[in-house]
Structure formats: C-alpha cells, structure tokens
Image (cartoon, rainbow, N blue to C red; front, side, top):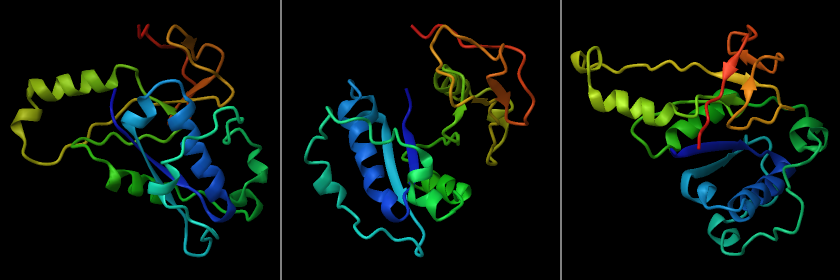
Length: 185
C-alpha cells in the first residue's frame, strides 16, 4: 500500500456531490484504506466558485449515511462541469496532487490508469538496493512507469487476464495484446 494524493475538480454545484463522494468513500467502503492512505484536494477556478464551500473539519465529524446510494454514481451530463462545457484542467489537478503529497517519491498517475499491483514494494526495493545507476548520480532522476488505461466499463480483479479483448491500451494508444494481473493474495 502507498499514500494517494487525489485532486478533485469540483466547480460550482459539483462541490457538494464531490464532498459527499469523499465522505461516502471514507465512511462506507467497508475498510479503513481510504481513510489511511488517501488525501483529497478539491479545486476549482475563480470563475466557477461554489456557492457553499464546506469546512472539512466540520463535515468529517458526522459519518455519512451509508444507506444512501453512492453519490458519485451519476450521469456525467448532469454535472456542473458538463453543463457549462468546462474542460478538466489535467495539469492543474496533477500539480495540486503533487504539491500536496506527503511522500518523498512521487509516481504520478491519472485516475483511469492502472499500474502493476506490485509497483510500490518493487520500486522501494530498487531504491533500497541503491545500485548503479541510482548510486552514481546526485542529480534528480525520473522513473518512467508502464501504465495501462482500462476501459471504464471493465472491472479488474486480482486474477484477471486483461487486454485480450481490447480492454487495455498502453498510454501511447497501442492496444496491448495481453496483460497479466498477478494474484495479489
């Protein structure tokens, strides 16, 4: 497991559903992983300021009503962002998440990208070994990641063979012939 810094674009009336979604994920997921590992950073432009910006210290005091449906399960065409034809400011979101991250190493991923399930322990093992070329440079280093975009309608499980039906694309847009998701148990 590793910390996740998640920037959420919530302009205008998208603020409250975004806050409710955070509360739902923190309180209703059935485990403490979201509370332990995820920090949320809500942002919006000065041209689309929400009417009400809730105080996080206040709204986190009251548990979310988990009998309600997941607030993020909505048709995107009903969102403020879509109704006002706003573009998602990808680089702004990345920069906010990066600046707010509380870790030494940053591995930026967009939410729809799927890294190897063993990325974190293998990466930290590589760093701990401090072998060349890591040990021979005092300059900043870039660690490129192999990332795969999963079709939004595809649900990944630990034992899946994905990519065989065209559900996965490498970030350069080429369809991956086969990607193995190893057993994570």
